[in-house]
Length: 493
Image (cartoon, rainbow, N blue to C red; front, side, top):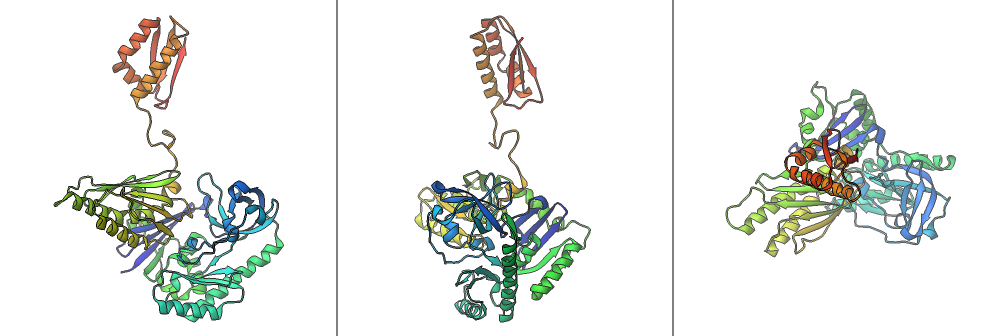
């Protein structure tokens, strides 16, 4: 039994879930109507600032935040990973940014990474247009093949076909989905991509910067193009209107896929019917339990994501090393799954439980690599260190699931913890003693959160009374439910 793509559409957002062969949620994509992704869009922009010290430029592409263009994205290797492909080829060429661009200059760019946090979108001057089977690279005489196509004969066959079909001065990446496809499939894809490119070229000459020249497909159509692979049996969608559009699109460009597309006609919500709605809150939790009784802790920060493995309730049956090894091996599969599901990107540090045997560390690394090879995003993984750490990077194109669905806690300001009532109470006592250094024999109104007020009444009553007696104060403690636990007011009356 193959996997499934489940699409839920509402006026506010579109959600795409990828279920594996065991009907387990493996990837989740959410695109809000008011905050659609810009990745893949092509713009005519204007350079507004050159930053030699950062070897980058800010480019106005028509949004509040200027886009970020690094010197490496002007002349160095193409980034194919935004389409889920993994290739060996890179072109490591770079020149100083001030030699490449000038302020006020119009540039032809494509968004390679959405705006994340406080950062503007990342852009590149190399344009790449993805189709179902191929990715078009204008101005590049090069043919690349996805490393996920393993059969050498098939790689050679596809390369020869594309070489015979491609127009001059255009390059192509042969995508994983092209495996076993026919010459006609490739020819149709090239014709479709060349039509897109010609339309972009025509519009480029007519408009002034900043202006959009091409908008990539929305998430529904991208699901057909990028996710509907050989091991996916069915795409199910719950919107009649979008289903009809999807059928028309597939009939026009990918007619061999039409049998895989179905309309969800049940009155039960589609994400409920496939158990997806229940899985989403779990993908936001900090602690993930393992079947053995061990658990992992996932903590996202601005700089990196840390993942910690713990034995928890699991005590094993033979030796400590065996218990640790089994916990680590179970954890690594869950970690690889959680990284994909949560769309964790950037630097990831995994703290496995330290193992004494070197062969166990090698085995752990090897299996983890195998698990991460299932990921469509580009990953770089380093060997297990002597401290039991695996350091890796995963290409971040869009926000993680947590960043899409959540925001920083207004109460703790994103710290994940707040000062205890005891700490705040002691800060209040210090503040009262400061007042005592300049004032005596006065009435003081102290307002604090109920938990802090109760601590002062019950646990630190003697401290309050001592301050009153020493300084001639009359202290009135008032509990205010509207106060933040860390906030208090001390006023002399």
